[in-house]
Image (spheres, one colour):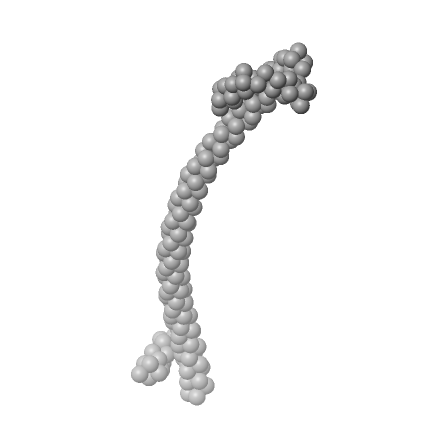
Length: 185
């Protein structure tokens, strides 16, 4: 397009030599100032590219790299978080299973302990009853023998008073035996 414009301008200049002067007067175009402005334009572009756009672009590139690294770290952290959640869920499940097992073992142990203590209490109660029966029988036997002796003595004393004679040891023994035989029958 520039070459087309340049060729059109060149044709216009050759066809009409006063046109160049007309353009210079219309737009205020001065050759040496125009060349100085073009040089200034390129110097400003170079300075801006070197000291403004270059550092800004480098800074933007560094920022883009840091953002990409941050996104990559975020993905790694999310992955680690998901793995951690799975590990935690597995550990919690395992702990719950272990707790249920321990509770069941404790219940079984408590039941067995309770059963054992119950059996021990029953055995102790039976032992106490046996001892009480033995003690009661011994007491009954002792009281019975005391009662027999006392009864025999009372019978002998009564017989001695009724008959008016003094009984000998053999008489007392015989009377006691007869009286006891009648009482026991």
